[in-house]
Structure formats: structure tokens, C-alpha cells
Length: 394
Image (tube, rainbow, N blue to C red):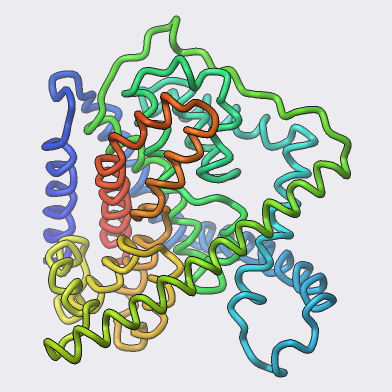
């Protein structure tokens, strides 16, 4: 029965993408089927096989080590601020982003990351039926982040047609940057973080190729990656350190505002209606949770966590998940965890539109106009990834 529900959920998700399609006649069925099969194989590999589990454990150990190194710097500056044994979210989860950002900067500076991104992007373009630029952008988004990725392709940004720009922005919203992966791993199981990142990569192409199908000619299929401005090594270090700290501060500020606001709204709704705002959202999202394969006993609370991610961000939702996780089955935790690992929320519309507008005002305005459609597609990507995982965890 659980397999049947997940399969129905898969069909419904693809149908919802089909309804929003700009040109249903040119949708390529074969690459979509191939990518769904690839998703299922990869999900099974990482969640069910010994090799996959060992790969996840190795990745988790790397991030554990990086977080320990980051802790040395944090303790030097903030040592004694927290009580012994206490867990301070800003210190333990957000500030390590600074160190991870530095490592990304070094890999960029030494040209290792651009080489990897181009290589994997070229391979992806053979599978997804899209252009080299779209494939490169998806990989780059998952490594350098949803804002920074547009800098790497700014030479082509002004010449892109709206349909290609949509795909680039959809990839940026569907993936997560490598700098905050370590932060996610402190909140949910690493195996779900890694699995979600990979599934979302393919899911972004699947949903975009249905909502926004188009052909890329050989003349258009050119990738021109922007070289970073010539800097000394220590100039680069300083820039990435500050960038990482800005990200940590921005996320912290958003969490303070959103968590406090949700608490206020929940209390007001509880006083007036006898039910919290998140519980109401839970009922709204419960049908989607059910189609994702979540057991019926968990769908209301799970729907509330899903809705929290959409209206706030993934960190707030992960915190909400931690508060109700004990009442969930292992399968529910796995499905919801995968759903949460993406930038698909309302605030991302402004972030992406602002990043593009900073490089090209006209294109930034174009992104703002299809912002809601962008969020719609990115949310379907998260739902699709969660359904694939539910098939494997069944």
C-alpha cells in the first residue's frame, strides 16, 4: 500500500508541474524517466547499501573534523561565553560556516572547484537533455551558493532568454550551498542531507524540464565561466572569511525574527481559536505529506513542519522537526528531513532576484516577475525528492 501511495504521489507531483508548463508539446519524456530512475538508484545506494552508507559515513566524518577545526577558532574568540556542556546554536551551528567558506575560497582560488563543476556539469548535460550552462549552474549552486553562483556566469547573464534564466534560478533555489551543509548535519542525519542534495540536483532538472521546457541550439549551448578578479591569496582569504561571517549573521538574524514571530502568531491563534498557527498549516499540508508517503498518524505534524519551511526557512523548520521528532516514525523523519534540505521558501525569491539584479538590473526584474512560479517549482522538487526517498524507505 505504501508503494502505491508513493507512486500516486509521484504522478500527482509530475502532474502539478505539467499543469504549470509553458509549452507541454515539447516536454522530453525520455530524459525525465531516466533521471527519475537515476534518483531511485542513488537513493537506494545511499540509504540501503553498505557501500552507500560507508560513503555517507566518510562524508560525515570529514564534516565532523571540519567542525572540530572550526571550533578551535570559535573557542578562541568566544571561549567562556557558553556554560560548560551547553549547546549554543549560533556558536555550534552557524559560526562554523565561516571556516567552511574559507575552504571553498581556497578551492576556488586554486581552480580545483571550477574544474570539478565544469566536469560534472558536462556529464549531467548528457543525461538531462539540457544545455551545458544549465548543468554547470546546478553543480555550482550546490557548491558556492544561490547568490554567488550568478557571479560565475555573469558574462552570459545579460544575453539569457527568460526561459533559460528560470532554469538557472530554479537550480539555485532547489539546491543548498556547501558552506552550510555542516550546519545541516548538526540538526538532521547526514545521510539525509547528502541524499537530498543529490536528489534535488536531478529533481531540479526534472521539474524545470516540465514546467519550463525548451530547446537549446548548438550556437546557444556555450558555457562561459567568469574568472574571479585577480587577488592575492590573503586578499581572497579575507574576502571569504567575511562572506562566511555575513552568511552566519544573516541566518542568525532571520532565525531570531522568524522564530519569535512564529511563537507570537502561534500564541495569538491558540488564545483566539484554541489551535496554533502551525497546527492549522499542518492540516493544509497534510494531503501533500500523505502523498509523500508519510504515515497517516504523522501527517498533521509533518505538514506543519513542511509549511514552516515554506513560510520561513529550512533552519526554522529543522528546529521545529527536532521538537516533534520523538513522536515520528523513522520513515517520517527520513522523508521530512529530505524535504527540508533546500532553499525553497519565500525569502529565497528576494535573495535570488536581488543577486541577479546586482549583476544585471533587467534580468533581476525578470526573475522577480516569475518569483512565485520559481518557488512553486522548487517546492515540487523537494516533494519529488521526498517521494523518491519514501519509495526506498518503504
